[in-house]
Image (cartoon, rainbow, N blue to C red; front, side, top):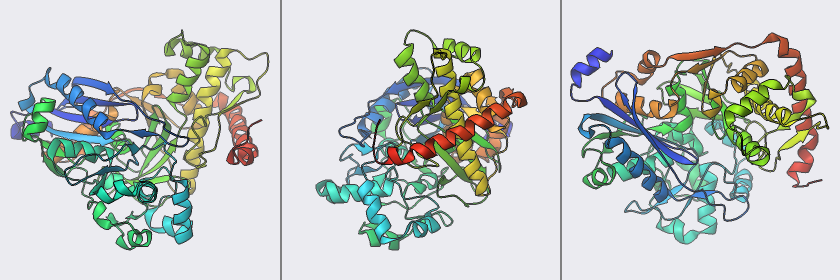
Length: 504
């Protein structure tokens, strides 16, 4: 495949992927056989103007992208870049005017300001009716309630809005001057028909939302446009370079680890945690998240948790800011499986699937004088693994069984943490060689769109190599089954207090 591709694209040596993450933009250039050629990352800030609000300035994303791309194009020849792909965080609501200017900061996926709008949506239609078509729950983090929030709370912005974009489509707009909407990001709006891949205008009419605000969805590999002269000057890319529509970060990550066949599962271990199971069916569960995969003919049944690497980073800042994450791994290994009876609920920013409770709180339970910081560290790792298991078991009830999982994100670099996840879930976990799965997935989409590959999924099969494999240790099974049962019971008992916002 690569030989044929090289013959057709003799002057093209690279594909570029751009990832608009929660805390930073990452960009990377890959050779056509998937080797990393150059990479750069640039951060940006999240604003928290009021309780429940978390927002970012889309122009900050673009500034970060231009800096990252300039770093890359200083290392490789821009004329040898075949195409660019962009992925991004989910559930943005980027309001742009007719000139493509961002009109206000966008609420990001952790934002819950649209709680009242969700209540209004459920007054108009019952939860099961929304789920029937969209295959996703009505929750304030999603894009559609945020559009309603704009309409109800900042009508002056809503009236000026020409289109509502996602994080990746905003960057595509800046690169090409073209408006786009990819299929994989459609799930953020409950007016999206998950089976037909189109907007249901009658649903928008019920909510009083102008359907013209939404662009018709296109395949993730569709060439949305080409780099403009202005964008070329700002980024260092060559004018005319093709840019594909791209997709959801979790979906590109799944492609980048080779989760392209039914049952293959991408395990997310970044700031947040979660999993994405590749499936041929759009069958879902109200407790989970369903989206189109960036791979044609496939869907992803996802579980997204707020407790991932961010929970361990929080603990490090709190108790051991002077030690490295590698040293934390060593401490965790010194503590016994089950952390001496210490249970951690990783709900430090509320929780998404499968409990969907923005009022959920983080909890350490069972602490005694006998516990050390090693126990605390391991308990955090185990708590996030329990959250992963909760999502996997919920998916199984919907008919989607997680097969071998492929880990990515910062926590995948931790051998002990990955082994704990294998032990807790009872699943084999493979860790790919590349630590750049998300941007690699975006680059692979660009490769298919530009005709470098006949199929991004087939290219991933050839490119992705496994570095190490973690097999469940059955000697820990009873310990973790008991710990998981206590984890579930602990939340069940505390949920009434959490939901009321009570504290002890």
